[in-house]
Image (cartoon, rainbow, N blue to C red):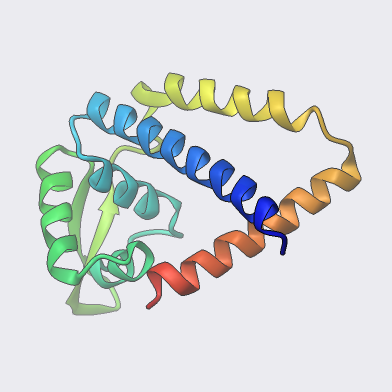
Length: 148
């Protein structure tokens, strides 16, 4: 890859990352949470049912001790509750208690509309390339930055 190309794409990725972090900090503040707590809640919400603290740690890259603190704060704020695993009573699961956080839906709808506005600028072939890039970027970053 040419150095100028790498510099240009690095700038765009850093800018996108900064905007994303600031967006989630804003959402978290409105919810009375830290950005880390809000993203862990998001991970739990996107899971297929209740999850273990270990799974949240695995997905977030946080230590299990840090995730315990996150769950404590989310539970105090009323966003999750701890429940016994019906298949193994020794296990504790984290269950989201707020559905899709309707009262904070407006800010997410603004973000969704912005995404639609951008994606409408591309044809189907270009969208396939963008999707391929995003999948590869997500997989590679997860493997190299979170799963290490």
